[in-house]
Image (cartoon, rainbow, N blue to C red; front, side, top):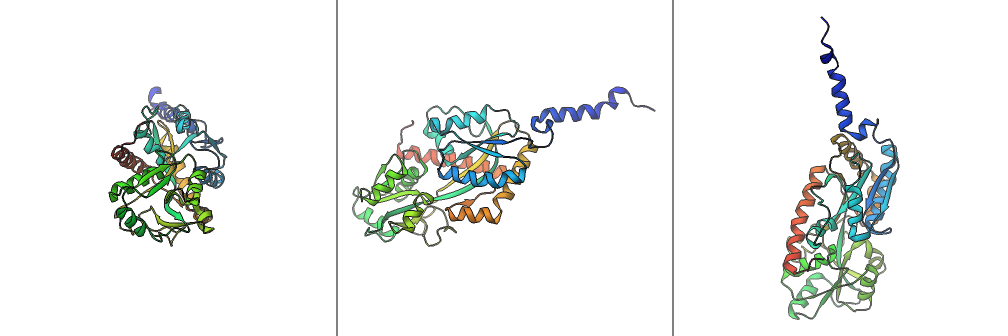
Length: 326
């Protein structure tokens, strides 16, 4: 007996509906054209270098080009809004980071919600900040520096980059967890910060290891402590802040890939699978290690959890330090 025409057409209608529900898949095999990644940082930044190394490896795996677009304007909101308003088809992504989690509490009117407006794909990398002093400093260890700060309240100072940067908040977290009376001095650029410690204008600085690596290798500055919860492969001789007695201190800068809300589960799964495989390639791991980075392949849920946790963590640090919203 022949099935009614309406029932016979049902499988075709279901398949058509599924294709229409997934714009990228409706066009055929994904991806079929270049993928853009919006980056809220300038060319040459640590995040930029990290992402471009990944793009060069990921593109061939996906069979397309990965185009990194630097959009540092408006504190990174331009990059986020470009991705937010893009068609959710997997061809426009954005790289969020620790700075994104900080922005939720630091900015008065953030024109996007990193949790509600985006879907996590995978982590990309982590990198640590270090606490460093001039190579001629009398402080040979972080424990010594902290001891001097206790003996001479209000005398020592710590330089960082701009207010609200990860290293600025790391310094505030150190101050809060130790109860020390030290002065935190923000500088406009990483170059200004390095110059300040080389001139002994500040007693110590907090900055990303990658940005200070050449100065450390050149014996211009001495790394006293690294902000990760355990020692790293790229700086194995630098003790953690926790080892210096500040138990539980943990500041790890990270970045990850996100897609606009509404991107299909199939596309997220495909991107996650290839991202994680790329981040585990020995050659990429070696290159990241040389630059003071560690790959961060995660599931979407793991990346979501990291973002949500850090929004709460940095919101408390900003509140406790009395940092005014911008």
